[in-house]
Every structure is written in structure tokens, then in C-alpha cells.
Length: 526
Image (cartoon, rainbow, N blue to C red; front, side):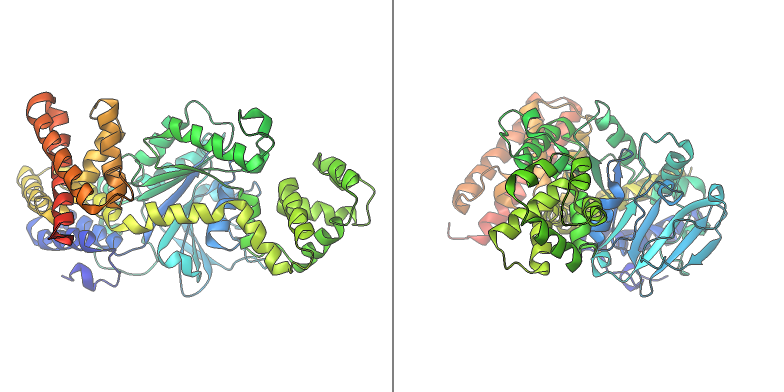
């Protein structure tokens, strides 16, 4: 058998390597079916982090996907493709593969404009999902899964999402691989398939059941519910928020969006790490090549309109396109489709402030105004920087599920014992902490609010200062506090906790103790 490090994928880090080696060692000690499942787990460990973009219909998911990828490739108009799950991943040749429910595949070229064809020319009821391969560098580290909107009236679209995320029957790159998923039964597919992280898209009209929808979606992805380690949310269409509807925002649209995002974060936490405002349309136009020098010229011409007329024009889309103006109505309509009124106003303000602004510089200012940079930075912080722990934890969940599905008590015990040995190692404690965090975040273990917040803080941050809630403090002070909290959680585990709480408390105690050890090792004379 091939060891995980030799299977062609690049493992995310030492935790993924440890889990991959565990699978490799166990393959000869389990049934052929379970061994095939372990091979698939190892393959997924070597693949880029799988990030599913979820949300309700008309929340602008596909527009945001295009912005993140940097290419207008995902269809945004309602059509047959928007009813399908589409996986965007790195490939050496741009192509689209239609994957049918019976396993057949049909290769299609992209449309002349570079997007997925609006019509596939096949019976959509026979299609499982689409695989889109792109040479974009961003996809080398992250596979993006675009999903049909939750709450869709099209039950078949929702079913396709659930089937793909919960029971994927495909190989990721359409290539032959060792121990591929074609050898797995449905139970095993359920265990090894699905995204490992979630980007949840909301709009200002957050529904009361958004948290339940998020939980239902993520429960089908990584064999465990989402938490602040592997899920963030964005407040899309931030430019449509009326500032007067948010107390304290004044007349500042972006301030209103930021304040509303904070309120939504309080609603959706602890299932998500954060909620960030973004204007997906503006980000897509600025980042995916839709904004042209001709658009910049038209905006420059609009910037010369007198203030009173311009303010009137920017009241509504209808007035903007119908007002008497030197810029043709069709050109103004094109600007609306790319930037909407907020983007048009932002561009005109930028031009008036810097009359010599080039088209490229104006595009960058529009990109800055979209909020995409903050979303990407948070993705890097929550997902990319923690990909090793996220992937390893999801893989262990799959390994456990595969063992339970085997029906062989001896095999199940053998796998359980091997996992316990792995988790007992200090370097693998992060996996214990992720498990404890998930139990608390999902409500499976009920903790007092202040202690739950502490568990989430310790488990959700990579920076030691942030873990301890003392960013920027001296390391000697951090070490003393870590040792103090380690002692407190050990006492709580022994004397004040329920059995379930005690299990979590022991993990948090050890997390603090390891932090103290690390700080002492970094500063032996302190």
C-alpha cells in the first residue's frame, strides 16, 4: 500500500500527517470495505480544504463565489445550472465536467464569456453535480463548493445539495486513484464525503431559523456540526441596508452594515466565528474583470454632473437610467448592473477626490469598498491557517464513522484504541480541543455561559494572546495566567462539573497547561 505522504496530495500539516499515517497502519487490520474508506480519507487529507458556500436563495452566493475565485464563472442568473451543486477546483486545463447520477461524466467547454454554459444540453434530472476545473491559483489551496439556495422551492435542488455533501459518489479530479470511492457502500460514502468548512451567506433579512438552516447544512458536510473553527458568515448586499434602520449608524451605509453584522454574529454564534459585511456584486465586478476602462470613462463623465442633479439621479435605479444626461441610458444601465447605486456613488466620490485617477486605480478603490479584502483575510485566518486541524478533525470523524459502520466490534475497538493513542500525544491535543469546542458550540455539552465563552476563545484562536483573552500582554503575564486557569479547570473537572462537563474541562485544563509549557520554553529565564 502507498503511504499517505506518497499519494500525490500535499498534506496540510503534522496533524493531517498523523491521521493519514494512522489510516495507513490500520488498513491491513480492517476489512476490505473499511480499508477502502481509509484510503479515501487519506486521499481527502491530501486535497485542498473543501469550503462550501451556503445560504438562502437570492442571497448572492454565486456572485460571492466569482469574487473569491477572481473570475465570473459561476452562473448568477436563475437557470438550470443554479439548481446544481458546482465544485470549483484547481486544474491544469479549464473545463467543466457534468457528473451524472449513474457515475457517467461528460466534458464541456466553458462558454465564450468564460462562464459555465447556461444550458448543459442534457437532462438535468439525471445530473448529480458539476465539476469545474480552473487554473486559478487561489484554488490550489481551497476547493469552493457552490450550492443551490436553502429554502428553494425546487426540492430537487436541495436534494442534490444534500446528496453531494452527505454522500458524494465521485472522485475529485476524475482521475484514477488508489482505493477510490467507487469501492465504498452508501454508509461509507456518508462518512468520508463532504466539505470541511462552511462560508454561510446571509442578507439583512435574517430569518429566525437561519441558525437551524446553518446547522442542518453543516451537519451534512463534515460528519460534525459547524463551529467557530470551521464556519464563518458574511452579510452580503451590505449596500442595500438603510442606515436609518440601524440605531447609531447616522447616514453611513457601511457603518450600518458593520453594526448589523455584529448583531447577526450574536445570533449565529457559536456556529460561526464571525459575520463580515460584503458587497458581492461590487467585489465580483472589480475582481473578476467586469469593470472596464469604458466604465471608468462613463463614471468620469457622470462625476461632472452638477451636485443637485446627481443626488436626484442616485435616489433610485429608475431615476438614474431615465434622467436626462449626456451619458447614454444604456451605459448607465450597464453601470447599474455592475456596481449598483452604492458602487456608482463610491466611484464618483473617488474620481472627484482624485481627478487623475486611472481606471485600474478606480477598480482597486471599488474593490476596497466592497469589503472583500476583510472576508479573504478572515478566510485565511479561520480556514487556511487552521486547515491542518480542520482537515485532521474531519478525517478522524470519518475514520470513527467508518469503523462504526463496519459491524465488527473487534474492528471498531481496534480503531478506537488507535485513535486514543494518537490523541494522547501532546502534539495531537489540538484535535481534542476541537472536539471539545464542537461539543460546547453545538450544545451537546451544556456549560455555564462564561465557561462556554472561554472554551470557544481557547479553541477558536491560533494566537496565544487571543486564546487567553489577553492580546498584547507580556509573555510572563500570559504564562502566569495560563497556569492559573489550568489549575482552575482541573479543580472544576474534579469537583464542580457533570460527567460531560468534566470531559471538556480536562481537555481545557490540558490546553492551558500546554500553553504554559510553550510560553516557558520560549522564555526559559522568565
